[in-house]
Length: 208
Length: 335
Image (tube, rainbow over all chains, first blue to last red; front, side):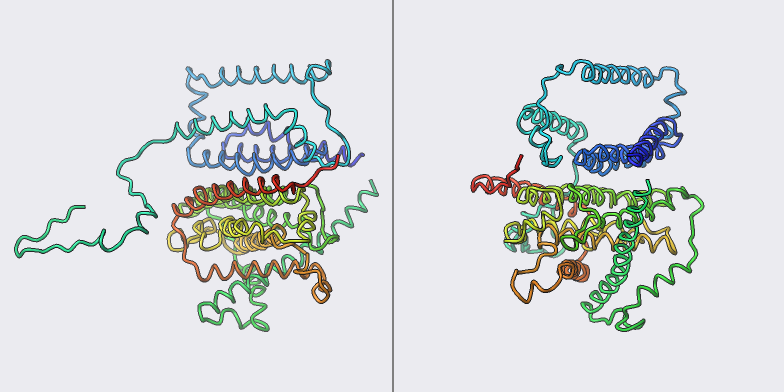
Protein backbone atom coordinates (compact mmCIF):
# COMPACT_ATOMS: atom_id res chain seq x y z
CA UNK A 1 0.00 0.00 0.00
CA UNK A 2 2.90 2.33 0.85
CA UNK A 3 4.48 1.64 -2.49
CA UNK A 4 1.18 2.38 -4.16
CA UNK A 5 0.95 5.80 -2.53
CA UNK A 6 4.60 6.53 -3.26
CA UNK A 7 3.92 5.93 -6.93
CA UNK A 8 0.72 7.94 -6.75
CA UNK A 9 2.49 10.97 -5.31
CA UNK A 10 5.39 10.53 -7.70
CA UNK A 11 3.14 10.67 -10.75
CA UNK A 12 0.86 13.40 -9.43
CA UNK A 13 3.78 15.63 -8.46
CA UNK A 14 5.19 15.20 -11.95
CA UNK A 15 1.76 15.92 -13.45
CA UNK A 16 1.25 19.11 -11.47
CA UNK A 17 4.80 20.29 -11.95
CA UNK A 18 4.72 19.73 -15.69
CA UNK A 19 1.32 21.38 -16.09
CA UNK A 20 2.71 24.43 -14.29
CA UNK A 21 5.73 24.34 -16.57
CA UNK A 22 3.45 24.25 -19.61
CA UNK A 23 2.11 27.71 -18.83
CA UNK A 24 5.26 29.26 -17.38
CA UNK A 25 8.07 28.05 -19.60
CA UNK A 26 9.50 30.65 -21.97
CA UNK A 27 10.05 28.47 -24.98
CA UNK A 28 6.91 27.11 -26.63
CA UNK A 29 8.64 23.91 -27.66
CA UNK A 30 9.47 23.22 -24.04
CA UNK A 31 5.86 23.79 -23.05
CA UNK A 32 4.73 21.21 -25.59
CA UNK A 33 7.25 18.73 -24.22
CA UNK A 34 5.97 19.39 -20.70
CA UNK A 35 2.42 18.93 -21.97
CA UNK A 36 3.45 15.51 -23.27
CA UNK A 37 5.02 14.67 -19.92
CA UNK A 38 1.78 15.77 -18.26
CA UNK A 39 -0.32 13.52 -20.48
CA UNK A 40 1.96 10.58 -19.81
CA UNK A 41 1.89 10.99 -16.05
CA UNK A 42 -1.89 11.40 -16.05
CA UNK A 43 -2.06 8.23 -18.15
CA UNK A 44 0.03 6.48 -15.50
CA UNK A 45 -2.38 7.73 -12.81
CA UNK A 46 -5.30 6.30 -14.79
CA UNK A 47 -3.54 2.94 -14.98
CA UNK A 48 -2.82 3.08 -11.25
CA UNK A 49 -6.51 3.38 -10.34
CA UNK A 50 -7.26 0.42 -12.59
CA UNK A 51 -8.63 2.31 -15.59
CA UNK A 52 -6.09 0.71 -17.89
CA UNK A 53 -8.16 1.20 -21.03
CA UNK A 54 -8.59 4.93 -20.42
CA UNK A 55 -4.91 5.33 -19.64
CA UNK A 56 -3.82 3.62 -22.84
CA UNK A 57 -6.34 5.53 -24.96
CA UNK A 58 -5.09 8.77 -23.40
CA UNK A 59 -1.57 7.82 -24.46
CA UNK A 60 -2.61 6.82 -27.97
CA UNK A 61 -4.91 9.75 -28.72
CA UNK A 62 -3.32 12.65 -26.87
CA UNK A 63 0.35 11.78 -26.84
CA UNK A 64 0.45 9.75 -30.03
CA UNK A 65 -1.63 12.06 -32.20
CA UNK A 66 -2.73 15.37 -30.68
CA UNK A 67 0.60 16.35 -29.13
CA UNK A 68 2.44 15.39 -32.32
CA UNK A 69 0.30 17.91 -34.19
CA UNK A 70 0.89 20.51 -31.45
CA UNK A 71 4.61 19.99 -31.77
CA UNK A 72 4.29 20.27 -35.52
CA UNK A 73 2.45 23.56 -35.37
CA UNK A 74 4.80 25.02 -32.79
CA UNK A 75 7.84 24.02 -34.81
CA UNK A 76 6.45 25.25 -38.10
CA UNK A 77 5.05 28.60 -36.99
CA UNK A 78 7.34 30.71 -34.96
CA UNK A 79 5.00 30.96 -32.02
CA UNK A 80 7.71 32.17 -29.66
CA UNK A 81 7.80 35.55 -31.37
CA UNK A 82 4.04 35.89 -31.40
CA UNK A 83 3.90 35.11 -27.73
CA UNK A 84 6.00 38.16 -26.95
CA UNK A 85 3.59 40.43 -28.79
CA UNK A 86 0.64 38.92 -26.95
CA UNK A 87 1.70 40.38 -23.67
CA UNK A 88 3.31 43.57 -24.88
CA UNK A 89 0.38 44.87 -26.93
CA UNK A 90 -2.10 46.78 -24.78
CA UNK A 91 -5.15 45.77 -26.77
CA UNK A 92 -4.40 42.09 -26.24
CA UNK A 93 -7.61 40.10 -25.90
CA UNK A 94 -5.92 36.80 -25.19
CA UNK A 95 -5.69 37.20 -21.44
CA UNK A 96 -9.35 38.20 -20.82
CA UNK A 97 -10.59 35.45 -23.15
CA UNK A 98 -8.39 32.91 -21.44
CA UNK A 99 -9.60 34.05 -18.04
CA UNK A 100 -13.27 33.76 -19.04
CA UNK A 101 -12.77 30.27 -20.45
CA UNK A 102 -10.85 29.07 -17.42
CA UNK A 103 -13.42 30.47 -14.98
CA UNK A 104 -16.16 28.68 -16.95
CA UNK A 105 -14.25 25.41 -16.84
CA UNK A 106 -13.68 25.81 -13.09
CA UNK A 107 -17.42 26.41 -12.53
CA UNK A 108 -18.31 23.35 -14.60
CA UNK A 109 -15.89 21.23 -12.63
CA UNK A 110 -17.33 22.56 -9.37
CA UNK A 111 -20.88 21.72 -10.44
CA UNK A 112 -20.02 18.23 -11.64
CA UNK A 113 -17.64 17.19 -8.87
CA UNK A 114 -19.66 18.90 -6.14
CA UNK A 115 -22.90 17.40 -7.36
CA UNK A 116 -21.36 13.98 -7.57
CA UNK A 117 -19.93 14.30 -4.11
CA UNK A 118 -22.95 15.65 -2.21
CA UNK A 119 -25.96 14.44 -4.15
CA UNK A 120 -25.40 10.93 -5.32
CA UNK A 121 -28.64 10.60 -7.27
CA UNK A 122 -27.93 13.75 -9.29
CA UNK A 123 -27.31 11.73 -12.40
CA UNK A 124 -29.15 8.46 -12.78
CA UNK A 125 -26.21 6.38 -13.82
CA UNK A 126 -26.26 2.65 -14.11
CA UNK A 127 -23.65 1.20 -11.83
CA UNK A 128 -20.79 -0.67 -13.38
CA UNK A 129 -21.08 -4.37 -12.83
CA UNK A 130 -17.99 -5.20 -10.88
CA UNK A 131 -16.95 -8.74 -11.48
CA UNK A 132 -14.09 -10.48 -13.19
CA UNK A 133 -14.97 -8.79 -16.46
CA UNK A 134 -12.11 -6.62 -17.69
CA UNK A 135 -12.12 -2.88 -17.62
CA UNK A 136 -12.55 -2.59 -21.38
CA UNK A 137 -15.58 -4.88 -21.38
CA UNK A 138 -17.23 -2.91 -18.60
CA UNK A 139 -16.74 0.36 -20.41
CA UNK A 140 -18.16 -1.13 -23.61
CA UNK A 141 -21.14 -2.59 -21.76
CA UNK A 142 -22.08 0.81 -20.37
CA UNK A 143 -21.21 2.89 -23.38
CA UNK A 144 -23.02 0.81 -25.99
CA UNK A 145 -26.18 0.18 -23.98
CA UNK A 146 -27.28 2.99 -21.65
CA UNK A 147 -25.31 5.79 -23.21
CA UNK A 148 -25.39 4.79 -26.87
CA UNK A 149 -27.21 8.01 -27.83
CA UNK A 150 -24.69 10.30 -26.18
CA UNK A 151 -21.85 8.23 -27.51
CA UNK A 152 -23.08 8.46 -31.08
CA UNK A 153 -23.87 12.15 -30.61
CA UNK A 154 -20.30 12.79 -29.50
CA UNK A 155 -19.13 11.00 -32.63
CA UNK A 156 -21.35 13.18 -34.83
CA UNK A 157 -20.05 16.33 -33.13
CA UNK A 158 -16.48 15.23 -33.77
CA UNK A 159 -17.33 14.47 -37.39
CA UNK A 160 -18.84 17.94 -37.78
CA UNK A 161 -15.73 19.50 -36.27
CA UNK A 162 -13.59 17.55 -38.69
CA UNK A 163 -15.65 18.58 -41.71
CA UNK A 164 -15.56 22.19 -40.52
CA UNK A 165 -11.79 22.14 -40.15
CA UNK A 166 -11.37 20.63 -43.61
CA UNK A 167 -13.73 23.23 -45.12
CA UNK A 168 -11.85 26.08 -43.46
CA UNK A 169 -8.52 25.03 -44.87
CA UNK A 170 -9.69 23.69 -48.22
CA UNK A 171 -9.13 25.86 -51.23
CA UNK A 172 -9.27 24.97 -54.86
CA UNK A 173 -5.88 25.67 -56.36
CA UNK A 174 -5.56 26.31 -60.05
CA UNK A 175 -2.68 25.23 -62.18
CA UNK A 176 -1.80 22.21 -60.09
CA UNK A 177 -1.05 19.10 -62.10
CA UNK A 178 -2.68 16.06 -60.61
CA UNK A 179 -1.82 12.50 -61.38
CA UNK A 180 -4.83 10.43 -62.36
CA UNK A 181 -4.06 6.74 -62.25
CA UNK A 182 -7.14 5.80 -64.27
CA UNK A 183 -6.21 8.20 -67.07
CA UNK A 184 -2.67 6.89 -67.07
CA UNK A 185 -3.69 3.29 -67.29
CA UNK A 186 -6.43 3.81 -69.86
CA UNK A 187 -4.15 5.61 -72.30
CA UNK A 188 -3.46 3.79 -75.54
CA UNK A 189 -1.47 4.67 -78.68
CA UNK A 190 -4.53 5.75 -80.61
CA UNK A 191 -5.54 8.33 -78.02
CA UNK A 192 -2.13 9.70 -77.24
CA UNK A 193 -0.09 9.53 -80.45
CA UNK A 194 -0.97 11.63 -83.42
CA UNK A 195 0.80 11.51 -86.74
CA UNK A 196 1.22 14.95 -88.26
CA UNK A 197 2.36 15.70 -91.73
CA UNK A 198 4.96 18.43 -91.29
CA UNK A 199 5.29 20.79 -94.22
CA UNK A 200 8.72 22.09 -95.03
CA UNK A 201 9.54 25.61 -93.76
CA UNK A 202 6.32 25.73 -91.73
CA UNK A 203 6.76 23.22 -88.96
CA UNK A 204 4.01 21.97 -86.73
CA UNK A 205 2.14 23.83 -84.06
CA UNK A 206 1.87 21.67 -80.99
CA UNK A 207 -0.81 22.72 -78.56
CA UNK A 208 -0.61 21.47 -75.03
CA UNK B 1 8.30 -2.45 1.33
CA UNK B 2 11.00 -5.14 1.53
CA UNK B 3 8.65 -7.56 -0.17
CA UNK B 4 8.25 -5.04 -2.93
CA UNK B 5 12.01 -4.65 -3.30
CA UNK B 6 12.31 -8.42 -3.65
CA UNK B 7 9.72 -8.40 -6.42
CA UNK B 8 11.61 -5.55 -8.04
CA UNK B 9 14.82 -7.56 -7.88
CA UNK B 10 13.20 -10.51 -9.60
CA UNK B 11 11.73 -8.26 -12.24
CA UNK B 12 15.06 -6.63 -12.99
CA UNK B 13 16.54 -10.09 -13.43
CA UNK B 14 13.75 -10.91 -15.88
CA UNK B 15 14.12 -7.61 -17.70
CA UNK B 16 17.84 -8.21 -18.24
CA UNK B 17 17.06 -11.68 -19.59
CA UNK B 18 14.63 -10.06 -22.02
CA UNK B 19 16.76 -7.09 -23.09
CA UNK B 20 20.06 -8.82 -23.71
CA UNK B 21 18.64 -11.33 -26.23
CA UNK B 22 16.78 -8.50 -27.97
CA UNK B 23 19.90 -6.39 -28.33
CA UNK B 24 21.89 -9.38 -29.58
CA UNK B 25 19.17 -10.31 -32.03
CA UNK B 26 19.01 -6.71 -33.25
CA UNK B 27 22.71 -6.97 -34.03
CA UNK B 28 22.19 -10.27 -35.83
CA UNK B 29 19.20 -8.94 -37.71
CA UNK B 30 21.21 -5.98 -39.02
CA UNK B 31 23.69 -8.48 -40.37
CA UNK B 32 20.90 -10.54 -41.92
CA UNK B 33 19.41 -7.44 -43.50
CA UNK B 34 22.67 -6.40 -45.10
CA UNK B 35 23.43 -9.94 -46.15
CA UNK B 36 20.06 -10.44 -47.86
CA UNK B 37 20.39 -7.07 -49.49
CA UNK B 38 23.81 -8.03 -50.82
CA UNK B 39 22.71 -11.43 -52.07
CA UNK B 40 19.74 -9.96 -53.94
CA UNK B 41 22.09 -7.53 -55.66
CA UNK B 42 24.58 -10.34 -56.42
CA UNK B 43 27.10 -8.96 -53.97
CA UNK B 44 28.52 -10.92 -51.06
CA UNK B 45 27.46 -8.55 -48.30
CA UNK B 46 29.34 -8.44 -45.00
CA UNK B 47 31.30 -11.70 -44.78
CA UNK B 48 34.69 -10.85 -43.34
CA UNK B 49 34.37 -10.37 -39.57
CA UNK B 50 33.74 -13.67 -37.81
CA UNK B 51 32.08 -16.74 -39.34
CA UNK B 52 29.89 -15.68 -42.32
CA UNK B 53 30.49 -12.10 -41.20
CA UNK B 54 28.24 -12.63 -38.18
CA UNK B 55 30.30 -10.32 -36.00
CA UNK B 56 30.15 -7.43 -38.48
CA UNK B 57 27.57 -5.53 -36.42
CA UNK B 58 29.64 -5.90 -33.27
CA UNK B 59 32.63 -4.48 -35.11
CA UNK B 60 30.45 -1.60 -36.31
CA UNK B 61 29.18 -0.98 -32.79
CA UNK B 62 32.76 -0.89 -31.49
CA UNK B 63 33.60 1.62 -34.18
CA UNK B 64 30.64 3.80 -33.20
CA UNK B 65 31.58 3.70 -29.53
CA UNK B 66 35.04 5.05 -30.24
CA UNK B 67 33.86 7.77 -32.58
CA UNK B 68 33.49 11.31 -31.35
CA UNK B 69 30.01 12.56 -30.58
CA UNK B 70 29.60 15.90 -32.30
CA UNK B 71 26.86 18.25 -31.11
CA UNK B 72 26.22 21.11 -33.53
CA UNK B 73 26.79 24.54 -31.99
CA UNK B 74 23.31 25.80 -32.88
CA UNK B 75 21.51 22.67 -31.73
CA UNK B 76 19.18 22.54 -28.76
CA UNK B 77 21.49 20.36 -26.70
CA UNK B 78 19.05 18.77 -24.26
CA UNK B 79 16.56 17.74 -26.92
CA UNK B 80 19.36 16.72 -29.27
CA UNK B 81 20.74 14.24 -26.74
CA UNK B 82 17.30 13.15 -25.60
CA UNK B 83 16.10 12.16 -29.08
CA UNK B 84 18.14 8.96 -29.62
CA UNK B 85 17.52 7.96 -26.00
CA UNK B 86 13.76 8.30 -26.50
CA UNK B 87 13.87 6.31 -29.73
CA UNK B 88 15.78 3.43 -28.23
CA UNK B 89 13.93 3.34 -24.91
CA UNK B 90 10.53 3.24 -26.60
CA UNK B 91 11.66 0.52 -28.99
CA UNK B 92 12.87 -1.65 -26.09
CA UNK B 93 10.05 -0.87 -23.64
CA UNK B 94 7.44 -2.26 -26.01
CA UNK B 95 8.96 -5.74 -25.78
CA UNK B 96 7.68 -6.09 -22.21
CA UNK B 97 4.29 -7.34 -23.38
CA UNK B 98 5.34 -9.59 -26.28
CA UNK B 99 4.56 -13.20 -25.31
CA UNK B 100 7.20 -15.70 -26.42
CA UNK B 101 5.09 -18.54 -25.03
CA UNK B 102 2.06 -18.84 -22.77
CA UNK B 103 4.10 -18.11 -19.63
CA UNK B 104 7.21 -16.52 -21.05
CA UNK B 105 6.06 -12.92 -20.99
CA UNK B 106 7.32 -10.10 -18.81
CA UNK B 107 3.99 -8.30 -18.31
CA UNK B 108 0.83 -10.17 -19.22
CA UNK B 109 -1.44 -7.11 -19.09
CA UNK B 110 -5.09 -6.90 -20.06
CA UNK B 111 -4.62 -4.17 -22.62
CA UNK B 112 -1.44 -5.54 -24.18
CA UNK B 113 -2.28 -4.67 -27.75
CA UNK B 114 -3.22 -1.10 -26.79
CA UNK B 115 0.10 -0.79 -24.97
CA UNK B 116 1.95 -1.93 -28.06
CA UNK B 117 0.01 0.49 -30.22
CA UNK B 118 0.58 3.36 -27.79
CA UNK B 119 4.31 2.77 -27.52
CA UNK B 120 4.74 2.40 -31.26
CA UNK B 121 2.82 5.64 -31.79
CA UNK B 122 5.17 7.41 -29.38
CA UNK B 123 8.10 6.35 -31.54
CA UNK B 124 7.60 9.38 -33.74
CA UNK B 125 8.82 11.68 -30.94
CA UNK B 126 12.40 10.50 -31.18
CA UNK B 127 12.43 11.43 -34.83
CA UNK B 128 10.71 14.81 -34.48
CA UNK B 129 12.92 15.76 -31.55
CA UNK B 130 16.08 14.73 -33.38
CA UNK B 131 15.06 16.57 -36.52
CA UNK B 132 14.05 19.76 -34.78
CA UNK B 133 16.92 19.92 -32.29
CA UNK B 134 19.55 19.55 -35.01
CA UNK B 135 18.56 23.04 -36.20
CA UNK B 136 19.42 22.22 -39.78
CA UNK B 137 17.40 21.98 -42.97
CA UNK B 138 17.69 18.35 -43.97
CA UNK B 139 16.95 16.87 -40.54
CA UNK B 140 13.95 19.15 -40.13
CA UNK B 141 12.47 18.22 -43.50
CA UNK B 142 13.09 14.56 -42.75
CA UNK B 143 11.42 14.85 -39.36
CA UNK B 144 8.36 16.56 -40.84
CA UNK B 145 8.03 13.91 -43.50
CA UNK B 146 8.37 11.07 -41.07
CA UNK B 147 5.91 12.52 -38.57
CA UNK B 148 3.24 12.96 -41.24
CA UNK B 149 3.93 9.49 -42.56
CA UNK B 150 3.85 7.73 -39.21
CA UNK B 151 0.70 9.50 -38.04
CA UNK B 152 -1.16 8.60 -41.23
CA UNK B 153 -0.19 4.95 -41.30
CA UNK B 154 -0.99 4.51 -37.63
CA UNK B 155 -4.64 5.13 -38.41
CA UNK B 156 -4.91 2.15 -40.71
CA UNK B 157 -2.87 -0.03 -38.34
CA UNK B 158 -5.37 0.86 -35.61
CA UNK B 159 -8.31 -0.21 -37.75
CA UNK B 160 -6.55 -3.44 -38.70
CA UNK B 161 -6.03 -4.16 -35.01
CA UNK B 162 -9.76 -3.58 -34.43
CA UNK B 163 -10.47 -6.19 -37.12
CA UNK B 164 -8.48 -8.77 -35.21
CA UNK B 165 -9.92 -7.72 -31.86
CA UNK B 166 -13.45 -8.22 -33.16
CA UNK B 167 -12.61 -11.86 -33.79
CA UNK B 168 -10.83 -12.35 -30.46
CA UNK B 169 -12.87 -10.33 -27.96
CA UNK B 170 -9.89 -9.50 -25.78
CA UNK B 171 -7.02 -7.03 -25.77
CA UNK B 172 -4.65 -9.48 -24.11
CA UNK B 173 -1.89 -10.64 -26.45
CA UNK B 174 -1.85 -14.18 -25.09
CA UNK B 175 -5.58 -14.50 -25.65
CA UNK B 176 -5.18 -13.19 -29.17
CA UNK B 177 -2.69 -15.99 -29.79
CA UNK B 178 -4.83 -18.67 -28.16
CA UNK B 179 -7.88 -17.60 -30.18
CA UNK B 180 -5.95 -18.59 -33.31
CA UNK B 181 -5.60 -22.21 -32.24
CA UNK B 182 -8.13 -23.37 -34.84
CA UNK B 183 -7.29 -21.00 -37.63
CA UNK B 184 -4.61 -18.35 -38.00
CA UNK B 185 -6.12 -14.98 -38.77
CA UNK B 186 -3.90 -14.63 -41.79
CA UNK B 187 -6.41 -16.83 -43.68
CA UNK B 188 -9.76 -15.07 -43.02
CA UNK B 189 -8.14 -11.64 -42.72
CA UNK B 190 -5.57 -12.00 -45.49
CA UNK B 191 -6.12 -8.54 -47.04
CA UNK B 192 -5.69 -7.03 -43.60
CA UNK B 193 -2.42 -8.91 -43.17
CA UNK B 194 -1.11 -7.46 -46.42
CA UNK B 195 -2.15 -3.93 -45.43
CA UNK B 196 -0.67 -4.40 -41.97
CA UNK B 197 2.61 -5.49 -43.47
CA UNK B 198 2.79 -2.51 -45.82
CA UNK B 199 1.76 -0.10 -43.05
CA UNK B 200 4.44 -1.61 -40.83
CA UNK B 201 6.98 -0.82 -43.53
CA UNK B 202 5.78 2.78 -43.55
CA UNK B 203 5.61 2.98 -39.77
CA UNK B 204 9.23 1.89 -39.37
CA UNK B 205 10.46 4.09 -42.25
CA UNK B 206 11.69 1.13 -44.23
CA UNK B 207 12.06 1.15 -48.00
CA UNK B 208 9.97 1.66 -50.14
CA UNK B 209 8.70 4.23 -47.64
CA UNK B 210 12.05 5.50 -46.34
CA UNK B 211 11.38 9.08 -47.41
CA UNK B 212 12.42 10.54 -44.02
CA UNK B 213 15.96 9.42 -44.72
CA UNK B 214 15.93 9.44 -48.49
CA UNK B 215 19.64 9.86 -49.12
CA UNK B 216 19.24 11.24 -52.61
CA UNK B 217 17.37 14.32 -51.42
CA UNK B 218 17.76 14.64 -47.65
CA UNK B 219 21.31 13.29 -46.99
CA UNK B 220 20.24 11.10 -44.05
CA UNK B 221 17.05 12.81 -42.91
CA UNK B 222 16.74 13.34 -39.18
CA UNK B 223 20.03 11.51 -38.50
CA UNK B 224 22.17 13.87 -40.56
CA UNK B 225 23.73 15.71 -37.62
CA UNK B 226 24.19 12.65 -35.42
CA UNK B 227 27.44 10.83 -35.03
CA UNK B 228 29.08 8.14 -32.99
CA UNK B 229 27.09 6.35 -30.33
CA UNK B 230 24.04 8.60 -30.71
CA UNK B 231 23.69 7.59 -34.34
CA UNK B 232 24.12 3.96 -33.33
CA UNK B 233 21.29 4.35 -30.81
CA UNK B 234 18.94 5.66 -33.49
CA UNK B 235 19.94 2.74 -35.59
CA UNK B 236 19.43 0.19 -32.81
CA UNK B 237 16.04 1.68 -31.99
CA UNK B 238 15.02 1.53 -35.62
CA UNK B 239 15.86 -2.15 -35.95
CA UNK B 240 14.31 -2.99 -32.57
CA UNK B 241 11.16 -1.30 -33.88
CA UNK B 242 11.26 -3.37 -37.05
CA UNK B 243 11.57 -6.55 -35.01
CA UNK B 244 8.71 -5.33 -32.84
CA UNK B 245 6.49 -4.80 -35.87
CA UNK B 246 7.37 -8.32 -37.05
CA UNK B 247 6.45 -9.68 -33.63
CA UNK B 248 3.19 -7.75 -33.70
CA UNK B 249 2.37 -9.13 -37.14
CA UNK B 250 3.09 -12.67 -36.08
CA UNK B 251 0.96 -12.31 -32.95
CA UNK B 252 -1.99 -10.72 -34.74
CA UNK B 253 -2.03 -12.86 -37.87
CA UNK B 254 0.40 -15.78 -37.74
CA UNK B 255 -0.65 -17.29 -34.44
CA UNK B 256 2.25 -16.07 -32.31
CA UNK B 257 3.89 -18.93 -30.48
CA UNK B 258 1.48 -21.59 -31.78
CA UNK B 259 2.85 -24.32 -34.07
CA UNK B 260 1.59 -24.49 -37.66
CA UNK B 261 -0.42 -27.59 -36.87
CA UNK B 262 -0.93 -29.35 -33.57
CA UNK B 263 0.54 -32.64 -34.82
CA UNK B 264 3.42 -34.72 -33.51
CA UNK B 265 6.70 -33.51 -34.98
CA UNK B 266 5.60 -29.88 -35.04
CA UNK B 267 4.24 -29.48 -31.52
CA UNK B 268 7.46 -30.80 -29.98
CA UNK B 269 9.29 -27.68 -31.11
CA UNK B 270 9.13 -25.28 -28.14
CA UNK B 271 6.79 -22.30 -28.39
CA UNK B 272 9.44 -19.53 -28.23
CA UNK B 273 11.17 -21.10 -31.22
CA UNK B 274 7.96 -20.87 -33.24
CA UNK B 275 7.63 -17.23 -32.31
CA UNK B 276 11.23 -16.55 -33.35
CA UNK B 277 10.75 -18.41 -36.62
CA UNK B 278 7.68 -16.34 -37.46
CA UNK B 279 9.43 -13.09 -36.58
CA UNK B 280 12.36 -14.14 -38.77
CA UNK B 281 10.04 -15.02 -41.62
CA UNK B 282 8.42 -11.59 -41.50
CA UNK B 283 11.80 -9.91 -41.20
CA UNK B 284 13.05 -11.77 -44.25
CA UNK B 285 10.12 -10.28 -46.16
CA UNK B 286 11.09 -6.83 -44.83
CA UNK B 287 14.69 -7.35 -45.98
CA UNK B 288 13.68 -8.64 -49.42
CA UNK B 289 11.35 -5.71 -49.96
CA UNK B 290 14.14 -3.30 -49.09
CA UNK B 291 16.22 -4.85 -51.82
CA UNK B 292 13.68 -5.13 -54.62
CA UNK B 293 11.21 -2.23 -54.40
CA UNK B 294 11.99 1.34 -55.51
CA UNK B 295 11.17 4.29 -53.28
CA UNK B 296 7.70 5.84 -53.35
CA UNK B 297 7.05 9.46 -54.17
CA UNK B 298 5.73 11.42 -51.19
CA UNK B 299 2.27 12.21 -52.58
CA UNK B 300 1.86 8.58 -53.63
CA UNK B 301 2.71 7.52 -50.11
CA UNK B 302 0.05 9.80 -48.61
CA UNK B 303 -2.48 8.74 -51.21
CA UNK B 304 -1.83 5.07 -50.44
CA UNK B 305 -2.28 5.64 -46.73
CA UNK B 306 -5.35 7.85 -46.66
CA UNK B 307 -7.22 7.08 -49.86
CA UNK B 308 -6.65 3.35 -50.25
CA UNK B 309 -5.65 1.67 -47.00
CA UNK B 310 -7.95 3.61 -44.69
CA UNK B 311 -11.22 3.16 -46.66
CA UNK B 312 -10.34 -0.43 -47.51
CA UNK B 313 -9.64 -1.43 -43.92
CA UNK B 314 -12.81 0.37 -42.77
CA UNK B 315 -14.91 -1.53 -45.31
CA UNK B 316 -13.25 -4.77 -44.31
CA UNK B 317 -14.02 -3.95 -40.68
CA UNK B 318 -17.70 -3.58 -41.51
CA UNK B 319 -17.58 -6.86 -43.44
CA UNK B 320 -15.89 -8.70 -40.57
CA UNK B 321 -18.36 -7.32 -38.06
CA UNK B 322 -21.38 -8.24 -40.20
CA UNK B 323 -20.02 -11.72 -40.87
CA UNK B 324 -19.43 -12.36 -37.18
CA UNK B 325 -22.84 -10.92 -36.28
CA UNK B 326 -24.77 -12.84 -38.93
CA UNK B 327 -23.21 -16.21 -38.12
CA UNK B 328 -23.41 -15.46 -34.40
CA UNK B 329 -19.68 -15.85 -33.94
CA UNK B 330 -19.03 -12.65 -32.01
CA UNK B 331 -17.01 -13.33 -28.86
CA UNK B 332 -19.28 -13.52 -25.81
CA UNK B 333 -18.71 -11.68 -22.57
CA UNK B 334 -19.51 -13.62 -19.44
CA UNK B 335 -20.74 -11.26 -16.72
